[in-house]
Every structure is written in C-alpha cells, then in structure tokens.
Length: 204
Image (cartoon, rainbow, N blue to C red; front, side, top):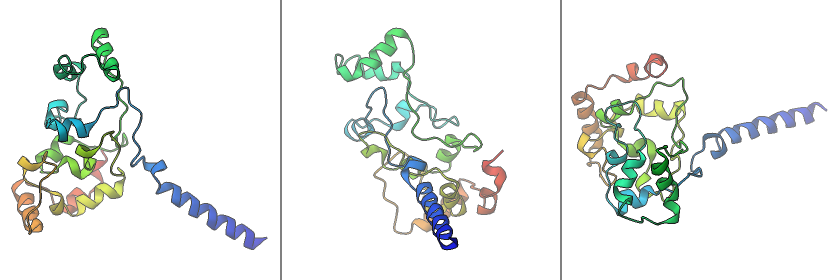
C-alpha cells in the first residue's frame, strides 16, 4: 500500500514536471491561428522589409506595436488585391476596424519589459523571437520564463551586438564576441549583472 502510494506520488510529480517543461505549458513552437496567415519569412527574407516598417514603435515604446491596416494596404492596395486570404485585411480597411491578431509573444502582466530599452542596448530581435525571418507562420521561439531572462541579465555580453546590426538576421559575431560584448556593455552603459538581476528591475 505504502509502496503504491510512493510510486503514484513519484509518477505524479514526474508527469507534472514533464508538462511544465513541455510546449503545452510555454507555447513554444506552437503557431496560433491568425485572421490572416501572415508570413514573416515572405515579408522579411523574400521582400526585404525591415522590422520597423510594421513594428514602428519598437525603438520608442515598451511595445513593438502591430501594423495598422493602412500599413498593410500600402502594398496590398497594389499587390494581390483580390487574393482571398487577404479578404480580412480589405474588410478591416472598409470597416475602419483593426484586425484582431492573436498575440504570440507575451510576458506576464507583473513583468516590466520595454522593447526600446533592449533595442537601445544592442539586443537583437533574434535573441527573444528567434529566426522569425524564416517563419512562414509565426510561433514563439523561446519560453518567456524567468530563467530565460535571467540567463541574459546575468551575462549580457554574449547577447549584444552593434545597434546597426540589431535588425540584421544574418549578422555574424566576430571571433572574439566576448570582447565586443564587454566593450558594448561599457559603451551602452549597461548596468552590472547584480543590478540587472535585482528583483526591482523586472518586477515593479
């Protein structure tokens, strides 16, 4: 009886741990269904559109921002004007109503996060969003858990690049990336790991 209870308890906790580390818990690699099957791969890699064209507030705000329908129609009033899959975009414009995109990347409400700070400090899009330029459908590339953020905050240098390379998905770090990272930490006035890992930095 006692042995059975012990086996059950171990199996229960092992199952709970496996679930907590699975994609069903953190949504990693799962692409939510969207009103329009938007392809970052097509727009970034094939057409060469810069992230900032659609995410216009990424350098000036906490949020990167979603493109308005008018931004989409800058091109699609000329291209693929009758495509069935773009019908929700045309309807959004006609009704003056934003498209209801489903968030892919989200941190909990109790986490203080700003895109503009990270961009200014040389943290590239790929660090958090993965190779979004290769995603036909957008999915969460990284688990936005506390340990993920702390990994970078404890040792920022390997995750930094020159500001002009932040949006360059094909950027290759130099052989001595650690030295570059240390120089950029000083140049961008990045706080010490002790300050970056202080509770008050991310929880306010």
